Image 1 (cartoon, rainbow, N blue to C red):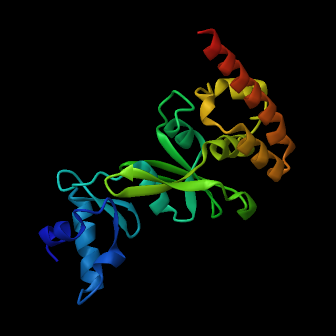
Image 2: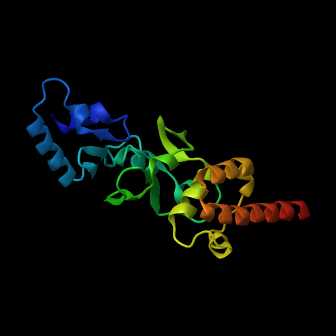
Image 3: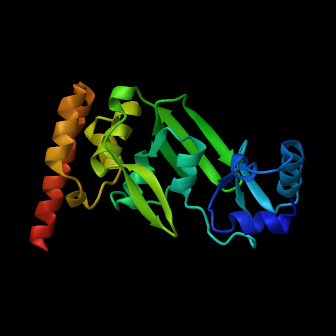
Length: 213
């Protein structure tokens, strides 16, 4: 396969796998050698074994970090500060994309970004949805309420008023307090129950602030 042929095949795909290229009469060993050469020459970027994206200027669709996070670990959804920033619940840029998975935790260091995966048990792997990222891309992401609770559940000493203040939560009108309460009650985690009280108080304070403006 020539590189021009590869570009024609995957130019509309943000990311692609070698399995997609192996259909038909293709020599798998030769293709893998070609892929290695194109990675070394900077024509394609390897995200993990078997998963790639075209490098600029050949890239026509820039892959969204959330899509790459889902593809690096299929059994996952984006959460933590990455999701909170997406929903406008925190003000700061987040350099690392963090996801939740039932698989092993870990960190993927790639040429196009760093992706972290935090482990939870299957009973807490819920309350996420698929979002449209544009350019025919989509990804699974926690609901606003679940992103907050994932963070508090898995980070140490995170249920205190001081920790929650340090998150600099904003636009709390985005949170559905009743939904947040149901998730907390379903979890039966005292840690989340303590944090819930602080979050509700922040939401009330924010609402009062808006009324005073």
